[in-house]
Amino acid sequence: NRKSRRVLVTGGAGFIGANFVHYWSRRYPGDRLVVLDALTYAGNPHNLASLEGNQNYRFVQGNICDRPLVENLLKEEAIDTIAHFAAESHVDRSILGPAAFIQTNVVGSFTLLEAFRNHWQTLPVPNLGERGPIFLHVSTDEVYGSLGPEDPGFTEQTPYSPNSPYSASKAGSDHLARAYYHTYGVPTLITNCSNNYGPYHFPEKLIPLMCINMLLGKPLPVYGDGQNIRDWLYVEDHCRGLDVVIHQGTPGETYNIGGNNEVKNIDLVKMLCQLMDELAPDLPVRPCETLMTFVKDRPGHDRRYAIDATKIKTQLGWTPTVTVEEGLRETVQWYLTHQEWWRPLLSAEYQDYYRQVYAN
Ligand code: NAD
Image (cartoon, rainbow, N blue to C red; front, side, top):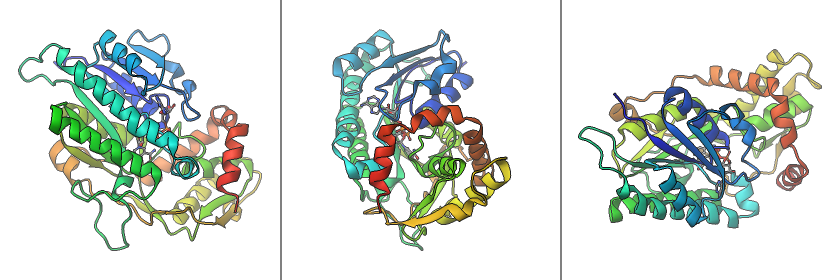
């Protein structure tokens, strides 16, 4: 007897947002889903093409910084849930040009919070036991900074210590989401998640980059000594985590989400190479490991991230279900069979970006 929700998904044409929209429409087909996305280089309408024609789904191309647009949409659609994914999300791009990160991640999040602050109380008061309006701010573990080799994983109490313009901008928006609960009583929730991977991941990110370069027979650039550690989570497990937080999280609280899957970058690339050698019938160069090349490290490159997800596990009963081995196999297979998805994304702009980042 769950009451259907009316959900605004910002950034729904991006990687996690699109996975979330597919997940949500399968799980809650009676819910209204409105996607607001500016379709930047990272937003791709093809990610949502299969939803066209669904009466409960609407796509709006627009910017989260556009206050009148956001206000009208909240009102017109009587939105009771915001799942806020829209962001500039790539650390390397934030080093090349931080301004867009401040604009979208800080000013854009502020704009949404302001609009929701005025909107949520105009909605009908929920019946006893019914879940009220929710603003979910989707964030990253990168706000906590970098861990030493022996440090315990990040908890919700770990002090913020962002090291890149990207993570600093996400930290700023996390603080705003928190403050809107404490100052105005807006029912905000924050999730800080570790590195995601899976289908629809834009080619610039580590896992798709490696898969695509293997399929093209191009060098596999590994930053520094390859010893940086990331805690990987299959995107569908992240979406399930966001689902439990939206439905059961306590407003004003933060929940860390992570797969307890720490892997060194170098080992991750080797795993991908082995999978690709096994799964791809006609690779230009094989074995793929011969394509690995070490390149100059990213400035301010965090050494290690690891999430302690005890809170969401014990309080909300979430656990990841996909192992890294299973998830990576699925992902490699997806890039292998969806070349028509990623080939058009390797545009002149992308090549230009690529040359700047991997110039050395
Ligand atoms: P992405 O770059 O793939 O997608 C971002 C989407 O936001 C794109 O569709 C883009 O068009 C849209 N967008 C950008 N600026 C906009 C604006 N001003 N107005 C409206 N839409 C705009 O990003 P992602 O990897 O899917 O990440 C989604 C969210 O999850 C981000 O907030 C990110 O910080 C967070 N996150 C990502 C990861 C990860 O591993 N990818 C991990 C934890 C948290």
